[in-house]
Length: 87
Image 1 (tube, one colour):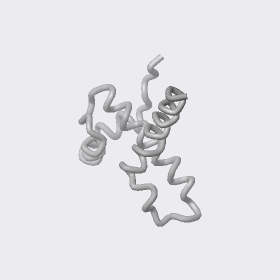
Image 2 (cartoon, helix red, strand yellow):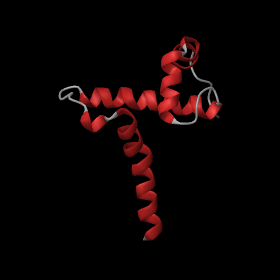
Image 3 (cartoon, rainbow, N blue to C red):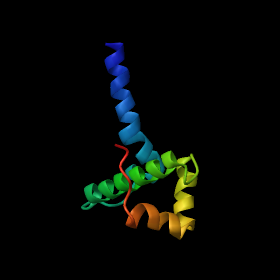
Image 4 (cartoon, rainbow, N blue to C red):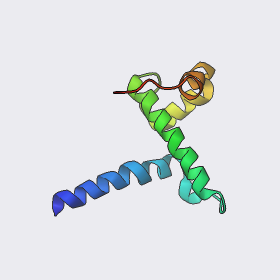
């Protein structure tokens, strides 16, 4: 039972807590479009995680967000050029 509970919280922490902490989802004033914005935030979070894994930006999420905000070439590489598969 303990293993199952830990696995549940691992998923909770990866999928809900981190994006909520990073993008402040719970504090968003959006009512009608909250699901659409949550999807956009998940895409953004995934792109940031991939950039961190490839070593193109800082390893801390908020610093990686700053890197993307400051570097046009980084945004072009990950948002408009496509991402090479890990497989």
